[in-house]
Image (cartoon, rainbow, N blue to C red; front, side, top):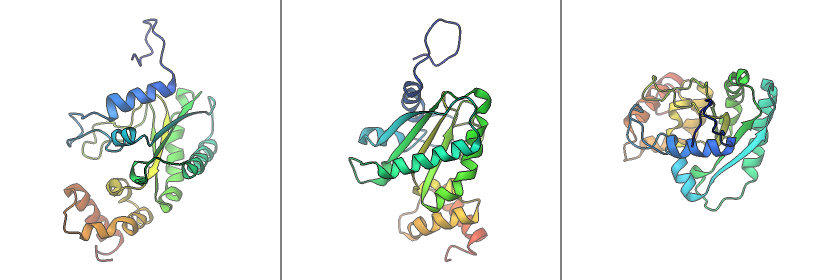
Length: 213
């Protein structure tokens, strides 16, 4: 599938098809610059196999403002919470909305909308990711890899997961929610990934005056 904008005469795929292609050919594959083994995203492949990755296209128009995108995220949350799932494993429940009609100049608004809505979502143990062709989000183990550059703009919503310490350790409120949900797992006999353990321990010292908090 050609995802380019070149003059070859080939038609670009529909936005939803382009997103699926990116899931399969990038997120579901290893990457030499990722800094770890395994697929780029540990959720997408298993969710696709379990048929719990739901993808929709929502029209937003060429020039939405940030409030429009925040309202769209709230609509996503409502839709996500009303969905019925074929399996009960909440870790694999994911809802992706591909945003259509958006001008390239408006892509940074996705980043700002994500920044504004993240505290509210984290309080409800939800995680939102923004992905688009100009996204500057970096891989946790290799800041040189812009891992969230998708061929089409989209938001992805899922439940908070154990590895989200990588995204929640630099804010007291966010880490408090993470600690409430997953703190007990760090006291288990099975040692978590060393990166997770180190980030969790440092955040405990910074925000909770130690991991025993």
